[in-house]
Image (cartoon, rainbow, N blue to C red; front, side, top):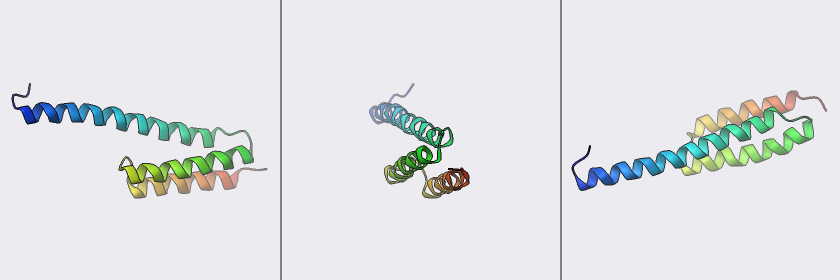
Length: 85
């Protein structure tokens, strides 16, 4: 166990950040699933708009890397374009 005051504070900060980051990462997974599990093309397109906004928001918060979000958006976009009306 840590003995220094600063080390104890870092442990508290790490726990808080881990909780926050895991929440956001889970949310990203659920939003991506919403696009891929959509029943119709219209439903997929609306879910894609939400996913696109949320993924870029996660980049600005520092949860995801820029290229990771771009890759996910690109794959979702290709998936939505493939769907039949």
